[in-house]
Length: 333
Image: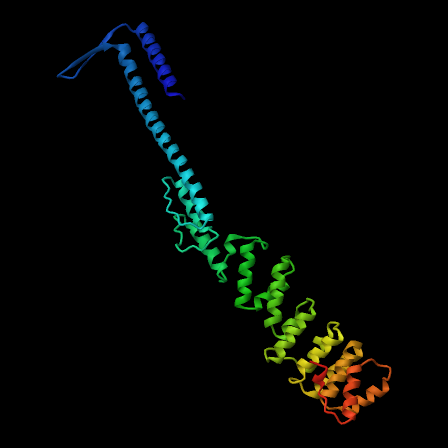
């Protein structure tokens, strides 16, 4: 209510009460205070307490009206300060903005912490929940695996996804549980989990997971095998390569990669099975026979397949028959 209107209606009310009491009781009442005697009409005595309360309420309204005026001015001042802070934060400038109201103090600290540029001074949040959320996001972004169940985040939430990736980095077996979770539809996270499994899991662990291996995945597994970071039995080696179709050059690349790390007879056996399943593996099989100096067997196969198109093998055999030492590396790198 407007202060002037409040005073006006209060005075009208007091006058009406005074008149009403005066009409009913037209008499005086004296109050003896020993050292002083107050003699007033009863109507005046009746109105006096009401007038006192009205005066106190007016003082109360004036106080809070003045307080609200200064608070509003402080908020307006903080708004301008906050806009300057936001601009300085985006520009990477140091800001010493100090806010007078709680309304902008916490948002100001949050804005500083969200700077796209490096923060040299850690923000100090008075709000414990905000402080905990900030510390959690910082730890997760720094690669730490944290406990975040209490926040009940969606499986598509970026903080949840990054935390899951951190768990995978800490222990690849977590990737296996992610791939086994049919309710998880985050393809980005599943791709990350699959990559971790390919690079770290044992072959029997990989075999138990139902996902397709790309040619690149198989090459990664073979690289792990030749670097002795993955154990593969001869049967598993065949099953792994037999999962996909490769080009003739890719089969040759696989053979060249494995020839120094697999027993020759075992490797020949693997590729003999492969060439029966995949025609493009035939030249890799012949390449291994030549490289392992199994020339008699190689000649038998070439003679029984006169219509074949393996020109590189033919040239190597021709050079050998004419007394030239020709390594397989002449054509197969």
